[in-house]
Length: 221
Ligand SMILES: CC(C)(COP(=O)(O)OP(=O)(O)OC[C@H]1O[C@@H](n2cnc3c(N)ncnc32)[C@H](O)[C@@H]1OP(=O)(O)O)[C@@H](O)C(=O)NCCC(=O)NCCS
Image (cartoon, rainbow, N blue to C red):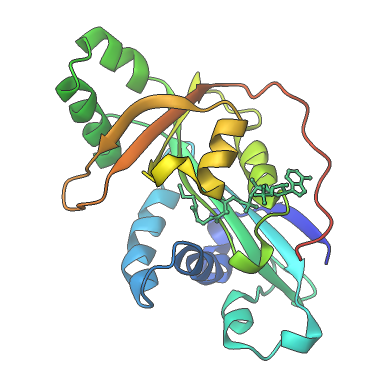
């Protein structure tokens, strides 16, 4: 199955937001219904300065075209001109700023860890927040996540990229191996966001990503 990357435009979000949330809920193994709570937040993110998003898009396999999962990820015009494609991956982010909750959580965490205020400023003053990166489980393990991430980070004006990801024993999942492979380093570990008991890591790396882009993947299974 051939995969293409496409920039997801704010004006087309009525077409791609539902499929993107479907991938998010499935990839993160969240309970069904989570997507309804997230929709408002994602719409708010879309309006933030420096917001940008890419989708990984594939032709829907005819044999499975009646499944509910595929139906939820099906794209329409104008994102899919032929209307015969599904979303298989999503990546988005925006420019970080001090009035954002995530920025404030990170700054508080850095201060609590004993970082000098000048260091806290240096870390949090000029960055792109990688907010969401998800590939549908049926398409994982083919380099699509890396392709999306490289595309999203290409030509960013910010000095660095920061993200948060759940702590995983021995960093043994695809997200951690992707971030480490691309040179992301620890910024703050074992942090708990207000209202969420799970532990998260903040990771970051300088921009630009200077290694040459890999050849695009041509199969999702
Ligand atoms: C994290 C995630 C986005 C990574 O996407 P992915 O497409 O699965 O992973 P990558 O792009 O890193 O692909 C790497 C794998 O593809 C394989 N691959 C095949 N062709 C490739 C190519 N051209 N380039 C790179 N890797 C390739 C690699 O061998 C590697 O396989 P492995 O993981 O079995 O070792 C995805 O696994 C996911 O959505 N996970 C669940 C949600 C999640 O954790 N999101 C992040 C929250 S912070």
